[in-house]
Image (cartoon, rainbow, N blue to C red; front, side, top):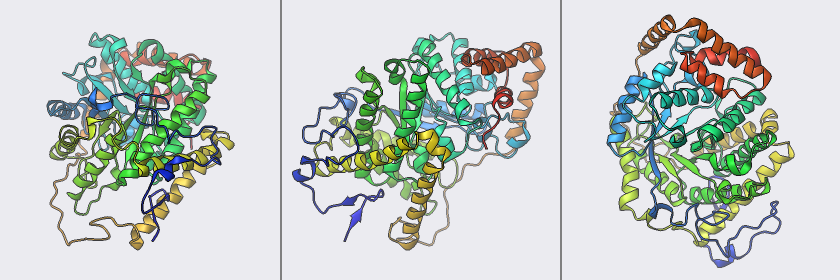
Length: 529
């Protein structure tokens, strides 16, 4: 019987030294993975981790992704999570915020506060972080097309708090290419979108030096149905496109390269996931070196992980606690720098407070009871893991080579290659579930007749009116002339090529709204269809 990983890599009955002693010389890369004489953790190409002591020196950052309803309600959840031991905040935004519409826009109806928190203005950002010192907390914001506006809100609030911008830490996702390929919350065409991203790189390098300017995301690629191999191949290809765009702008790879971060998914196939993380680190180190990096810190792949939302089942939802535990172990054994664990009830609704607490406790049990963090790369040297790391790398590199031959990620997306590959994999995976070839416990095997008793967490549509009223009050009390001048300055910067960030920050400080800023750029660049 032939067994394979979910990426189609054949698994042998047993592995030995012979499986890792040599690596195919037919590989399309110009390097040979160091499998017979693995460098130690903290050493190039960082297969075994980016720090010599990994978690013995410092545990991964335990984040919980949260955001719903109004800024006030999300703020309560943040304070609760911080009281329970969360080490960093991770903000989810609602759909209108993600695609550049204020809550009072007609297209926002029915969506305000549903998939995350509604943020229309600097006033909402103040409420979201009320009682939280931005200089003392690391914040990750999952936002892309409007990421530059949310970053401007955050910077403006930090300045109001009197924070030293040089000490502000956190991450903005800011990864628009995966939106075109896998997720869909884009606004502008690819070229101006890439321009916004490099503007953020450039501005943060000067003013926000500890901020991670992009979180190049494989997570949503995986959620859309890709395999583990495709996840890292498409993500690293997107990363190459961002690096090349920054180089074309004359930026120093050894400076901006240190502020790049990645965001990966953790699924249930424990060993393939560990191999995926190890292979991705090694591949990125080689990619950055080939692109001209000479500082090893600019070659390090640092990443956040979230457990797999698409793996959670509405049937027998408490089984999801076991799934999240396996995925947590995969992320930790694979060397993640921060981690969010999903609530067991997320296939049914937004996570309840209890589910969020159990998800956090899962990380804490692994951190303090499992022994997994006690040594760096504990699975390193395993015949199976080392061979699987090589196979994942080989297969991912073949996909990257195809994308390079098309002219890179932007061209591959425009040609539909990446989207079609993801769709094909998603279809094949679903077929395996429907035929029973792939067992999902509680779904196609070991099922029970059940009445769901898990309490759901729902958002009332009435919160839209709360946001609409806030916006009306804001517009009535602000300096209308000053706000109009600020919006005109953004339009002028967009046209003449100046960095957008200074004018956007000035606009939010003068109470321009997210939708107003996004609309100005819609006028200049149009919308991508």
